[in-house]
Length: 68
Image (cartoon, rainbow, N blue to C red; front, side, top):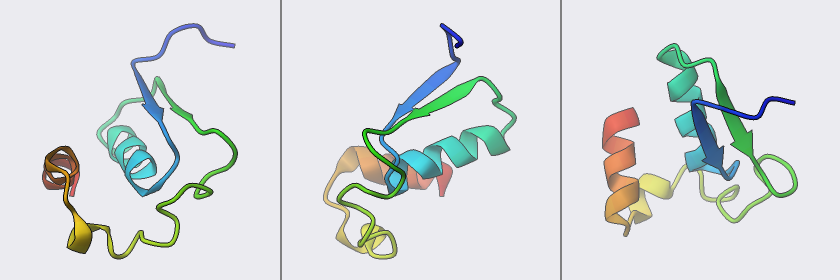
């Protein structure tokens, strides 16, 4: 098991998986995704298509504008 990673994304919901996808797409190879149980098992699995419409968080909005 590796002890270091360039980036660690916590949470395999729509935002976590999207961030990881875009990092890998930009060439990052030493990245890790941590999830408590299984991918898409969190609270955003049912709202993936609606997330931009109900965005009340400045941080999430910034992530969407950078990676979207």
